[in-house]
Amino acid sequence: MTLSDAPAVELVGISKRFGAVQANDDVHLTVRAGAVHGIIGENGAGKSTLVSILSGHYQADSGTIRLFGQEVKLAASADAIAQGIGMVHQHFMLVPNFTVLENLMLQTAKAPFLKESRAEVRTRLAEIETTYGLSVDPDAVVEKLPVGLQQRVEIIKALLAGGRILILDEPTGVLTPDETDRLFESLAMLKAKGVTILLITHKLREIMAVTDEVSVMRRGRMVAQRRTAETGREELAELMVGRAVAVVRNQSTRPAGAPVLIADHLTVRDEAGVTRLSDVSFALHAGEIVGVAGVAGNGQSELLNVLAGIVPPSGGSFTVGGRTISAESPTDPGEIRDLHVAHVPEDRRREGLVLPFQMSENSVLGYLDEARASRPWLLRTRRMRARCQALMDRFDVRPADPRLAASGFSGGNQQKLVIAREHGAAPRVLLVGQPTRGVDIGAIEFIHRELLALRDAGCAILLVSVELDEILALSDRIIGMNAGRIVGTLPAADADRQSVGLMMAGISAGHGPDGQHLEKSA
View 1 (cartoon, rainbow, N blue to C red):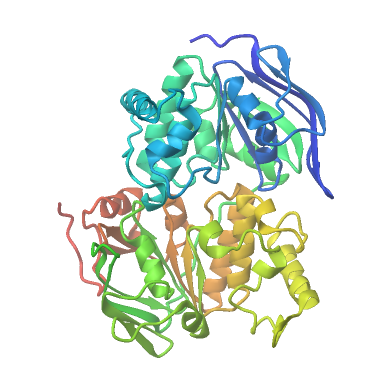
View 2 (spheres, one colour; view 1 turned 90 degrees about the vertical axis):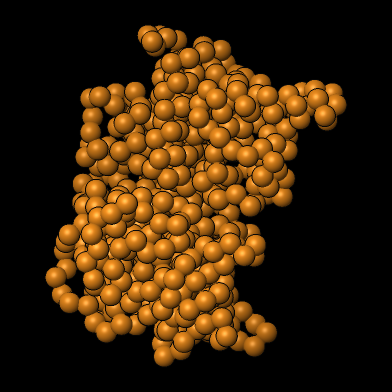
């Protein structure tokens, strides 16, 4: 359709400060009605703050907001919803122990009686599912859903609000490639009906694929706006970071060392007795990165958790640091750390950080003794802060203030601190889950270089990522997982998107864990 000449959104001179941090500095933004408009920038560039102002979550210190030519005051989220703005946050705004239906009712129910309200929301949910292909069990408890389905509930909640402007803040960070494709199909349908979409993402491939225009933020300011068809990834990356960004690839040809972690028929069953990890065997060697490729929910999370000592094996065993862990001889995360195994969890907010704690406190979680940050009954606050400051400077965590609570940092900067903490422990084995989820392109380059440097120093790294490009760029060997089992293993030199994609789909396309060749078969 022809895009309207009247802007759906005009932000004029928007500024916002949090203490010493200038999050937005005289920002100007114009978004055409009925367009998909991307906003990109490094972590901490001010993107989330800007759209939080537009959604009424924050109020600007100065500046003007116009919607479809009319100046508006958005003093609260309710004001934004009333103006037709729907917001899908980067981190979920759901009640974990409520069902999907109950979460949707909190925002959309209008009937005076609960029974009628439930029926109304069920009907509207069915319409959304039919129209946009976003299906979810309305009676499922949210905290029992995989992360990808929780994100889908957030998207459905925003769609049910019926807004004219939809803001998506890093919506694909937890979605599988297929789910991402379905989301973008839904966005295309919304655009065709005249809905204006603001897409905040660090993934330039997505920007190029689905947006009409893109605006670039750097250090709180808007530095450029481009028509997507008239720019490219290289220019956008340089505008984001302020310098040329290199693609980091594993080019090592050195042989791996001795095995440092061996999994032997490892099996994990959940509390309901369902097998999540089945008969997994492999060896991880010093000085190599083994990438684990698979669609989310196919056993990768359980593999990381059992090796990190978070859940016990139900069957089989694994050996690390001379210790064999099994159902009969379980372990815990503390002992695993003592065996020089570090762990970057997939969900940094739930498992990697204590959000109300200061960053200095988070920087020593699990490593108080090693960091010499405590004495009996007493924390050494100055030493803790000095150590955290060094980690922040080394890994470019912004703002570089150890006294700030972790909850006040962007997701990418939270991730950089978790990686800095585990990297700083000088591990012999590093378990890494989704290392660059929600991280900007400049930070991705940095994190990839650090992982390769750690590997070159002799560390054995098990890398779990839903980003296939990341697996291909960093791995020495690639394990394909499907339905909790290892489908096959490929040397990185023999791997490409097609062969790894086959393994993710459950089709053998490589070598077994002991090196035997596996023919491609259904």
